[in-house]
Length: 134
Image (cartoon, rainbow, N blue to C red; front, side, top):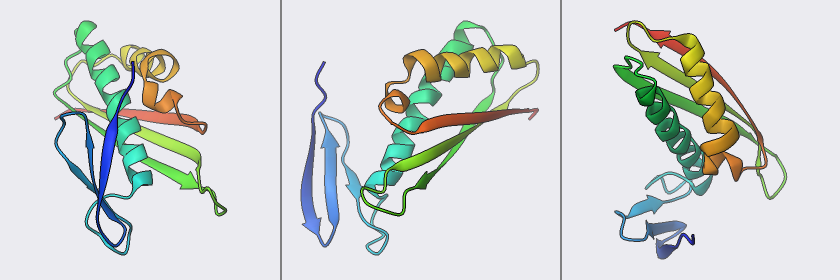
């Protein structure tokens, strides 16, 4: 399956990006501030991919997740190409009665089998999770 995206230069280092028929996203550098940087989009894509996997798996396991958030951060190499050398993911679940073993299994399945975004990165991905009652 091929995935296609298109970028159009708008000004400075700002681009309007669109994948297929999806809504457009502005990419920019830190100085421009008009949107996330491409490397920030890499992290957001990885977080979104694993989030969809995990919430889908936990739904199938009938876990009572009321709210769910991911925080992701990465360390970039100082030298070009400034790739991520480490990525950390924090999964936070809100709900009563969520089973930690179900959460761990869902995350492990996402990162080892299903998440194509994290599998596409050469950096090792580590994670933590927490469950909070509303």
